[in-house]
Length: 370
Image (cartoon, rainbow, N blue to C red):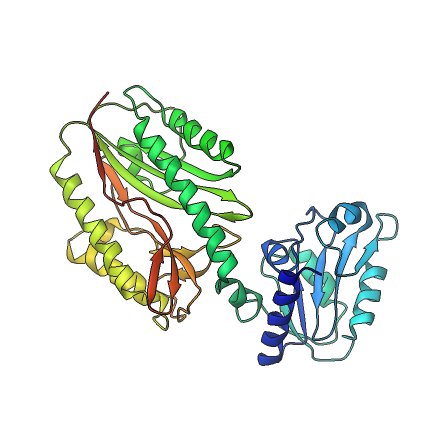
């Protein structure tokens, strides 16, 4: 068992004790990857890792067992074949874990397929169930020093990709051309693209624009929102520019308002602050400036093994932030048929406040046509 796996299982078992949890069940999801370093092939064949206070085991299709064992050989596999089906192997695993008693408190992976979850629950006697928010999910949200470094390293690679992309802008380039420059830069530095949005002109007013064949012309807004995955962890950042000689006055005004909203959210981000307070700080700046209706999404999301994970900076989420949380701050203003501006950074929350992982200025660039 690796030191990372051993440490994370120990932390999980402490959370299980604190929350009076008897059994944690996770599917072939990012929870399994985080906890066991195991990322098995996922299809309709049931796969699940089960953890109790004393033991753990993985229900695993025999078809995939050898490949999975190269990732994780420290937890026993309970293998089943297509000929026999999974029920006998699952029964053997549950017997070994000693979870046949009535009324177990069970935590289910919210990303697990429903048929996997019901297969498990049907073998238990009157269990109570909930999702992972106070066990695996909570632990994942509190990044350790190694995760902090991996996320920062990935953010800095993203910085260089953005610098190259903005420096490469030329009249007549398509959004897809810029995306290719970014993706090629990632791959040249040992990373894989996680996602890439390049939006020119009015397309930037769509927060989740699909990068396409539209071409760059003078006097256009440019929005780039992209991230890569390096050493298992992702990045996520948004920057904007005006490609032209004279930005529209409202573009310049909106850029300043969005930056003020970022600063307000950064100032509000402290351990113990509610996620809703971060959203409220950013949203309040934009509403006061008269653009409240043009800010159509949450202020941020957590980032870790997944690009989007808890905690979420929404008006409805009163969860308190804790040191070690990593999340985005990304307010935006979107004016249909004109332009959109979103400025996004990932921050790591320390005891005294947030550290921005990127080293790239948020300044909205003005780029002369070329």
